[in-house]
Structure formats: structure tokens, C-alpha cells
Image (cartoon, rainbow, N blue to C red; front, side, top):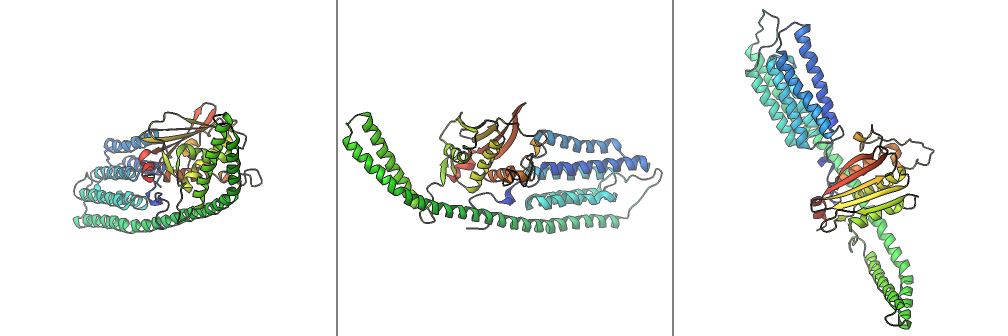
Length: 439
């Protein structure tokens, strides 16, 4: 098995590791610095500054930040293309401010390297090269076209052309160095993370399949004898039962089900690398029943609803991540439910949806936007308490479940569906993310 991919799951390098909140926070810092800088030059130093034009550009960044937060939320993890487009905007906005305040004569022109560094650290190489190209073009334009550098009224400052060319060369060299060096370092770090994650998943999958092989062989051996006895007794009863009677029909059903059990045991005996895994694919309804079963004895009612289903029932590829992720969310709902947990599933030709709702107090309002982050929990952690064995006490349960389910192509949303709480987790898979694995 390759150590760069395991169980057909996406690699960590294909995830969306950069949160929207990080980009927004960096932009707020830039907005604050730009505002202070413009006001200090205009009123602190008394130099003439095109305040209206500068604050129009700063206002564009403010508007973009507000729109992003209201539209997507701070916890959203944008795609590489979306993140690159935001960083490109920051480059253009900074270039516009520099053009209004002296171009490369302005000592803050060095900040053109900042968006390149952010891109090289977090985005794929193609996006980084695009941002680097934009920064180089902006620096080149600023070297020949810009408004005068704000200076004392009545005085004119003149820079030697060779000095300006030197500044331009230094910025281009910085762009090239950051792009080449930081991109390479970040790429190697992502490769190591890919290998470790893939190895962990591969070992986990192999360990569980090995354990399943042993349990299957033991079950087939132990169940074979009593099943044969049941089948033999049923056949003797069929010989004595009156044909066409209810008893004869019941006995015939017992014989048919015993034959079905023998077929299942035959499959269990063939589990393993050579015989394959006949249970690798499972319908959605059976999958949900399987992951919910361990929580049925905890005193809470688990109710299943299958509505608005059009087309054939989706069939999932059973994987460690899928079983753990769904099981963890159902367990978490059972922990906080007062009496009932509802599991609703629907599907059509485009998408598959599963909602897990409990009648408990709901998610804490201040945590909803950040659910899915590691070490985020509202459950008190008592090392001596009943929850001491649960990873959720550390705030890792939902994070792990969300991460594993997103690897299968799912998207998760958390909400409270009533003023009294009633937490709901909605999981949606695009149909094409599931079907290729089952064909």
C-alpha cells in the first residue's frame, strides 16, 4: 500500500487548512496599520496625502472583511482558489495605496512581500506562483508610475534612478526567494504530514480488518453447529406439519433463514486479503443502524426517519473514518439528549443528507461558529469523573469526527433548531463523491 494515500481518502495536503478567520484577522491588522500610517503622515507630520483616495482603498478591505464574515462565518475553511483570490486582492489594494503615496519611494513598499509569504506558507505552488507574479507586476508598475511621495510642503525630494532600480531589484529578489524557499519548505512539511496520516490510516484499517478476520472465523466456527441443529430440527418439523398450514409456512421460513445464515457464515470464512471483504460496501440505512447500535442501550430512544428519498439507495464504502465519524456524532448526541435522538436521511440524484438531532440543551451559542476546531468543548473535563475515558472531554471528538467525514467528501453544518436548544448536525455528501467508490 502506498504511504501517500490510504483507503481512497483525500490526503491532508488536499484539505483546506487555512481558516477564513486567519485571513480576515491578517487583513484587519493591515487595515489598522494602513489607517494609522496615513493619518500619522497627514496630521502627525503635516505632509499632503490624498486622504479620500487612500480611505476608499482601505474601505474596500473593510467591506470585504465584513462581507466574508457575514457570508461564510469565521470558521469557514476556504478553497485554495478562494484564499488565493483574497490574497491577490490584498496585493492589489496595497499596490494602489503605494501608487498614491510614492510608489517604490515609499519605505512601506517592502510590504509587497507579505502576501507572497502568506501564500507560500499555506497555498499550493500554482497559487503561490500566481501571487508572486502579481506582486512582481505591481512592483514593476510602481517603479515607473506613481504619485509623488508625501513630503514637506514647498520641498521636493528626488531619488536617483539607479536607487529606484535597486529597490525594484531587491523586491523582485525577495519575491523570488520567498516563493522558491518557503514554498519548498512548506511542500516538504506537507509531504511528511501526508505520509504520517496515510500510514496511520493504513495501519488502523489493517488492524481492524485483522481483528475482524479473527472474530469472523471464531463466529463461523461457533455458530456452525447450532445452526445445523436448527436446520435439521426444522426439516423434521416440516415432515410432520400439515401442508398449507400456518405451522408449515413458519417452518419453511425458518429453513430459508437458516440457509441464508449459512451463506453469510460462508462469506465470513472468506474474509481476508485473499477472499476479499464482502461487507466492504453497505447501504446507507444499514450503515446508520450499525453505527447507532452501540448507543441503543444507554437509555435514550434513537429514532430513524428516511424521507424525501428519490432514486436508488446510496451504497457507501465502509471505512474506519466513516464509521468512527458517524458513530462519534451519534454518541455525542446521545450523551446530551434528554430522551430522544433523531437520525434522518434523505437522498436524490445529486446529494445524500444525514441529520442527527437530539432533544438536549443544544450547542452553546458562542461555540457554534467554531465547532470542529480542536480542543473546543463545553463538557467539563474531570479526570476522576465518569467522562474521564472520553476524548470529547478534551474537545477532540467533534474535531476528529468532522475531519474524518470531510475526508470522505462530506460537508458538516452545526445548528440549534429551536430556542430551547435541540442540537443538530447535518452531513451532506455530493452523490458523485460516493458513487465512484461503489461502482
